[in-house]
Length: 220
View 1 (tube, rainbow, N blue to C red):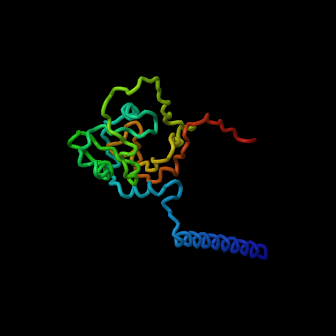
View 2 (cartoon, helix red, strand yellow; view 1 turned 90 degrees about the horizontal axis):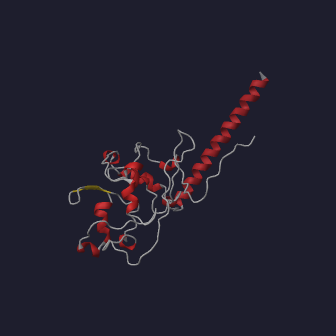
View 3 (cartoon, rainbow, N blue to C red; view 1 turned 120 degrees about the horizontal axis):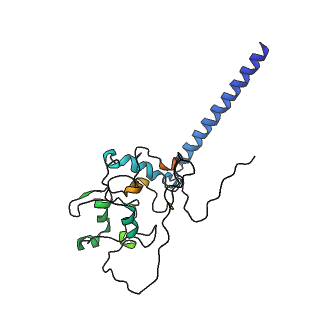
């Protein structure tokens, strides 16, 4: 009977310490929020994924046009990760206010003018679009060159047949996974089939292929 009483006291002590730890952690989090810490900068702007998931209608996220593909995607870029040019004429009235680009590329949808679904920008907060994206005025080269693009990142790369593949690119300007991987404007080869899961980086981790992968070996 004495032994059972001692074990009960130990259990009560452990539960009390666990409760105190949870309460202290909650107080620390509340204090952090009260101090005005910008939670948008947590985990490399990871909050953008949640916001985009909540603001995007589910029918749009699961829609499939099958039109854009990786060949077209890379054909419009000098190298993987470079900003694509503007592939269509831009009305002169847009030149005075670059945020007009977001009237189409902020939320996507179908363009009657071009007969295509509009890709969504993953960084609508960067409204100086012409700083990175330029119109193509000629297909001729200014100077002859032997430039060759770098090899695009390889898709998949899962170590196990059932494990989630890593993110093969950097996250800068591409924090919002939903913009590129869901919806009818997404590239067909990288369009996901589980758009209802909002926190992409809970399973997929950034692993840009900048160095040879190290083979994992468990210590004996």
